[in-house]
Image (cartoon, rainbow, N blue to C red):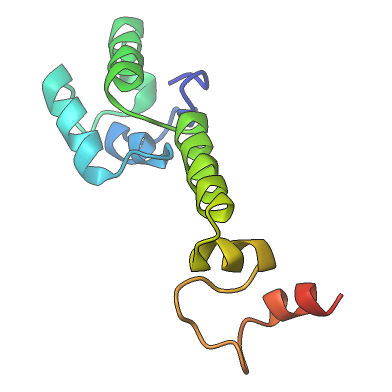
Length: 116
């Protein structure tokens, strides 16, 4: 697989493992698109034909949000939460834990940022 869609170029790994190394593709999504293409999960990347690789890349780019698109969406969500001053947005700005974790004795890295 090439890097234009964020696929990891690991020729000696099985397709089922290599396809899940892309951000936004987990085991279930990888299994679904392999099934639609008729590719076995046990085949190694180096054993795929150029046509099969092109088909995989085309299907991933059409159907799934992966890598930079996914990360851009996450950043936009965080910016939106910060701009409307939600509690989570304020915690993002401060660099504090967001999901109710204890901060009195833990979260040392976030406390270091606050003290500086």
